[in-house]
Structure formats: structure tokens, C-alpha cells
Amino acid sequence: MSTPVDTENLTVLSLPLSDHRVRPLLDELAVEYETRYADLFGAGNAAAELNKYPAEEFAAPDGAVLIIQENGVSVAGGAFRRYSQDTAEFKRIWTHSQHRRRGLARRVLAELEATAVDLGYSRVYLTTGPRQPEARGLYLNTGYEAHFDVDAAPETLPFLAFSKDLPGN
Image (cartoon, rainbow, N blue to C red; front, side, top):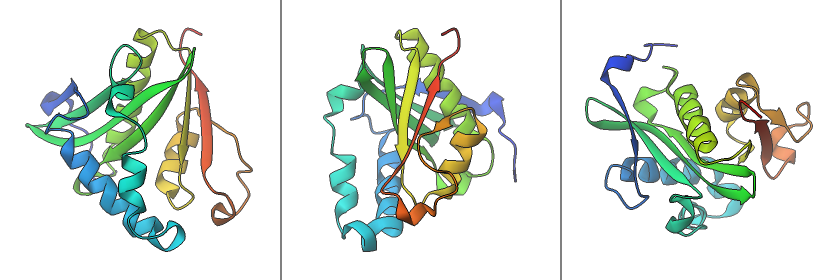
């Protein structure tokens, strides 16, 4: 880690997907998806992926959007929606490129997990792309079970699926 997280200057916000403080997450995710996957899935696919689910699916009582701000600036975040009766599906987990390697993604996961438990979920499911080794490592190192051959070359897999039982379940 380059600079550890200074928790005194962090604020966790639960916001609607349409809130302007969520926009940095979506904008940078679009750039990241286009950069990593345009040659695989075609240019313009990032917008389709980011608009794949209606915003209402990420709202209470079945979902949430959480943003971590540092000194009023959105630096990390994530969201979830209902996947099944007892399972939340985590989506859009992101750390701003200028704030990576500080433990913020772990903090996002912990906040999402706690919020999911508060909404009655006992399990999490998520997927990430094969060209996101940082995400793969994060999930494997935070107790998520891989639902793919971890020894397979990532490019041979369309996506990498993970799940985790939430605390108290």
C-alpha cells in the first residue's frame, strides 16, 4: 500500500444512483471498461454494461449504492442489488485511479457486506472481468469463494464469479 486509509477524513454515504456524487464512480468505470475490454467486447460496450440494470434495483429495500468520500471527494464506492431471496449481488465496486493501493476497496467491501446484512441478506454473489487481476486478488484475499478454476488462464473465462457467506449466517 502506498498511503494507508486515513479513516478520520472518510465519510461513507448511501446515495441514489442518480446522485452527482456517484458520477465519478460511473465515469471512471466506463473508461476502465473501455480500456480493458473494448477489443474483446466491442467499443461502446461500457455504457451498455453500466446501464444494464435499472437504477431502482440498487435502491432500498433490495439494494444500495455506497460512496466513500475523502474530504468531500468521492474516492471509492460500490453497489448491490437483489440476486435471490437471501443473496445480494455486488456490482460497480470501484476505487478512483488516483486513490488505489490504500485499502479503500477492502473498506468498500466491508461497508457493502454490513449494509447487505442490515437488509437481511446472508450471502453475496459477484462477478468481475477476466482482465481485472486486482479485483480477482481482492476477492480471493477477503474470503470470497471462486466459482471458476483459479489455475485457468483468465482470458479463457468470460467472467470470474465469486460468493461469500455473510457474518452471522
